[in-house]
Image 1 (cartoon, helix red, strand yellow):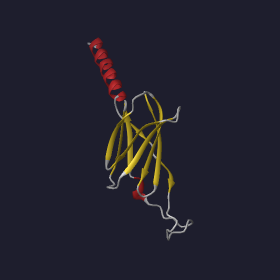
Image 2 (cartoon, rainbow, N blue to C red):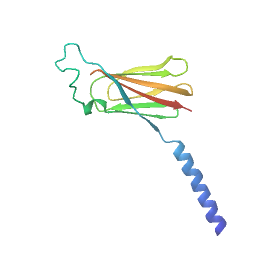
Image 3 (tube, helix red, strand yellow):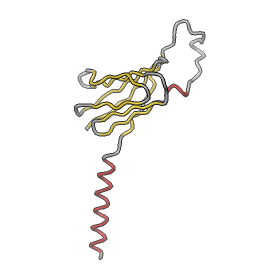
Length: 126
């Protein structure tokens, strides 16, 4: 009976480890730049933070990069290889997109919004 219990626990552990490896990894997005028009009435020393402008989420699972937002405005996304500096994938989207990353490696993600906000994040494809 003990052997059966130990076997069942080992099998459960193997299944959990495999399931954990298959979950998507969230990419932490950071605002790196906010472009402001020259004719803006707001002065540089009094910019109010806009909580709604960074409502993007990104995750990677295997070779699939998933990006989503609840904004209705178009956004442009670039994926850049950290080693070569080459643009691996780029796309304009509204709402959500899924992009295929062809090779394993380390990448930088840039999201450019219509309102002038630029978000970036780093991820790896294994």
